[in-house]
Length: 187
Image (tube, one colour):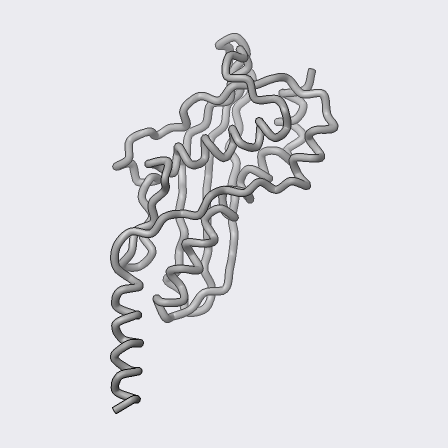
């Protein structure tokens, strides 16, 4: 009888773990990368709304098997935008009125947990820098992560949910570590 109850509880947990919407955890900066940039003389920058802003755009929807991942910012584009603003603020160079503006478009945004043992995240962004409305820099950046996963949805889904901020951090690390990006923002 106890085994039957245990089996029912496990089955119910597995079924409900894959249903509904899950929230992405809050972004946390890579302070080592930010500290490296703090030592450089960089221009103050503003950040344009990251495209696409449409919540129905493919990059603003992430499916984790039977569950969907969502964000408090409403879209993953806005999540990326707020993460970048948080980093630039930490570096002391974010200024909303600056005529040096970063514009970004999410091209790909996905967490894949279809494998039995590994999960993968991939995010691609097209990034531009405009100075006084003149395009001065344009480049595509790719961030990728790999993490332990499981065939069991009750394990894989929460793990993928917790990994999303690391994917964003990895993409931003690629941007902030790029000598061309640093040179473009240097005084």
